[in-house]
Structures are given as structure tokens and as C-alpha cells.
Length: 362
Image 1 (cartoon, helix red, strand yellow):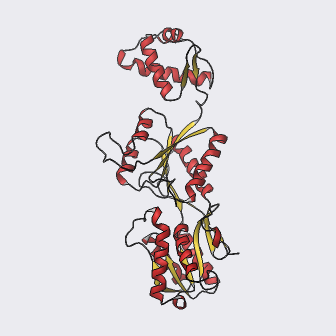
Image 2 (image 1 turned 30 degrees about the vertical axis):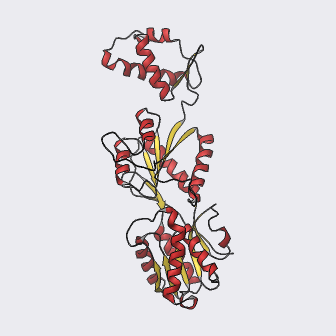
């Protein structure tokens, strides 16, 4: 390669670009020429070369081994994906979905040459001021070019999401997002199929424990379609559009079922059927029913959301119908969307929905 002259301002950028290209040509694990040869070949000083190599080493493009030489990183062709969580997924009572997500990431890393970094939001978030972000570790990784894409899980913070969007990195989101393509559950279909199932079981009246207030509209529509009477005393959901904190779902299920029984005047006043749109909410409700001697499947037909492979409702799987969502399908779809984003394709921001499978009791 002929020696090339560049101005000091763009010389380092030129060297980084050429070394990156060279690393790709040589391939993962291969040894590059010595620093002296590279400096001469690129027409730069050893100081400029050293700074450029340091940048590339921080990005995982090359490795410098003392006394051995400069090598192309063995993971050069790996995609580096950041998993960004807006909550502590390791706390007691967290959804099994996140464990399933991490397990699938591990399998994907082995099969598809991907590297994953986990970013949990700090407990004490700082307000965004200029370049001061909510998550310093994520900010540092993005600044150093260590990530090729992001999977966002339960960010639930508009300011945080705005900051991530400003970083201009390919990203997809779990459940919902205003800035990124999202993977979610078709809750309307879940409620519709659950209602059809209860109607087929001979139910005449139905109630709802909805983890979101917006679940009431499709519930009302489905009840009308299938000719079921709504037992208003057994319809409970949040007062606003906010998703209750995850660690409150189970106690909330207990509280709502207690309220339900009180409003209905006990077991005899309950509706024939009940739809619950969250598995952990359902677990709390079912625990309260058990403590009060009410038998799901006999005294009350229940259909609840569930994650395939999760043990959250294992004790009751022979007594209630599960409207199952396959987390693996969700994760696979997220990876496919992210691959498309990384490759530069424009995607529809309309949420992508995964199918529901009804698994009857017994």
C-alpha cells in the first residue's frame, strides 16, 4: 500500500478506517504486521498509530499481546447486542419471561456468533443533563462503539427512551415503544379467544382482572360478541393507563380477588367465568381463591395469560385454561427485527404481535 499523507485533523480517522478494513481482510485471530510496518504503510507516526490501535482495541476489533504482536480479535465477526432493562429482573418475584429471554440469548450467542451485554437501570436515576444519562455504563459502551444494537425491555420512561433514540443505534423494544419497532402480545386476541372458550364451556357471565385499564374495551366487545353478561362487581383494573410495578402484581391479584368476593357477596355471587391478563396477577388471585375454598375449574372457570415454559401457574395448570404466549417466539422475532435494523432496513413502528395458544385445563 503506498504511503498517504493526511492532515492531522483526519489522520487518526483515516488510520482507524484502514486498520478496520485490514482486520476484516485478515480475518478473526490473524496476526497483523508490526507497529513499525503499519506506521510506515499508513504514512503516520507511531504515536498516531498507537492511539488508533487503542481505539480499535476498546471496540474489540484488535488485541495487542505484549511481546507477541497485534492480532485481529477472534470475535470480530460477532454482533454485540446490549440488553437494556428498565427494572431489576433479578429481584424476588420477577417474571420468568426474563429468565427465558436470557437463556435464549445464551443459546443464540453460541449458535449465531453474538455477544450480549446486560445493562440494568441504576436504582437512583439522575435527570438527563446534557450528556449525563440515566445509565453511565450503557453511555460509555455506546460512546466507545462497543455495541451494534440494543434490545430494550420495559424501559417505561419517556426521557430515558428519548436519550436512547438520540444515540442513533439500531434497537428494538419489548412490548411497546414510540421510537422503536416493538414485539408484543396481541392482548385483544387473547381476550377474544378466552371469551370464546368460556362461552363454549357454557358460561353465562364473566369478569375481568386486567393488568392494564385498556383491556376493558376488548373485554366488553368480546363479551357482547359471544353473548355473555358482564358481572361488573368482578371487573377490576388500574384506574389509569400505568402498568402497576411488577413486584406488586401478585399482591394486587390477591387484593382484587378479595374485593371481587366482597362485591359479589361470596362464592355464590361470582360470575361463571373470569379472564386474567397477567400470569403473576393470576397467581395472586388463585392463591386467594384457594385460601377461601373456591375451586377453579369447578366453582369458577378461569382463563389466564401465561408464558410457555414458565412455572408461575404450574400448580393450577390442571384447573384453569392457559392463554399461552411463547417467549422464545418473541425473542426470535426481536432478533430478526434487530438484524434488519442493523443491516439498515427501515421497519414499521407498528407493534409486531406474537400468536396466542389456548391450553385447556387437564
